[in-house]
Amino acid sequence: MELNNTSAVVTGGASGLGEATARALAERGVKVVLADLNDEAGAAIAKELGGAYVHCDVTNTDEVIAALEAAKAMAPLWSAVNCAGIGWATRTIGKDGEYASAHDLDIYRKVIEINLIGTFNVCRLAATAMSHNTPDVDGMRGALLNTASVAAEDGQIGQAAYSSSKGGVVGLTLPLARDIAPIGVRANCILPGLIDTPIYGAGPASDEFKARLGAGVLFPKRLGFAREFASLAVELLSNSYMNAESVRIDAGIRMQPK
Image (cartoon, rainbow, N blue to C red; front, side, top):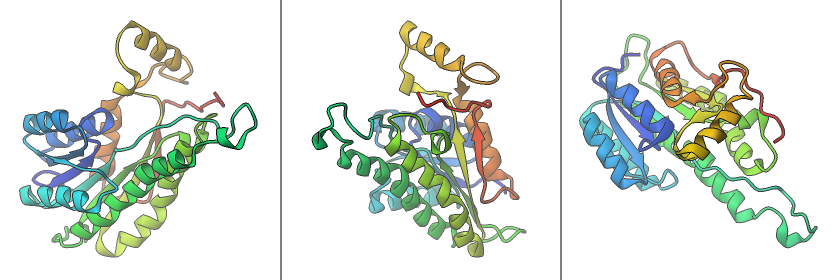
């Protein structure tokens, strides 16, 4: 699938995996819309890349549509990448055996709402927008790419909410791809492992923590780089024969219970 002279929407594009993917797409001649809640960083990166920034909560349909329309205004929309998401770590039950100390149900709902429902919201709207594209020689009109996590398969203690949401994203992949195949849009999913993003902070303590995490990786024994995720993202978008796949990028790690 040709990326040059097309546009893309990248949710969570103002930092981490989303930013790296936006930069990789821009290098391929894509006009990128960063859809994020970090207005300052998003606007600065968009200006640098010659794209656009749209303040966007992925659970808000109007804001997602605004991001899609901003992309269409620059070039035909052929790619949508979901990197927006949140994490949470809480055990299902508390230590005191009281009902009140069980996992907060509102937090569980929030994680599902953003990570899973927000992802689907972008997919359903982006595919609708792509359905109006003029198809290429394969009859293709675009591609969707979602971000899950190895926690979808190797969920650790305290990750009930997060793993549920990411497992849902993996489970979404095949039926989504089947739903949108008639309009010529593909859908794939990446399950990243331990990737070095701003979530780990900075400084000596952060570096020491990341080194300990990296020691548990099969090989190479380090955290992944966001640009490595972005490289896979661009491949899944551009390779026309990649469809309905969920691909781990984790250097062989299998997460332990804790």
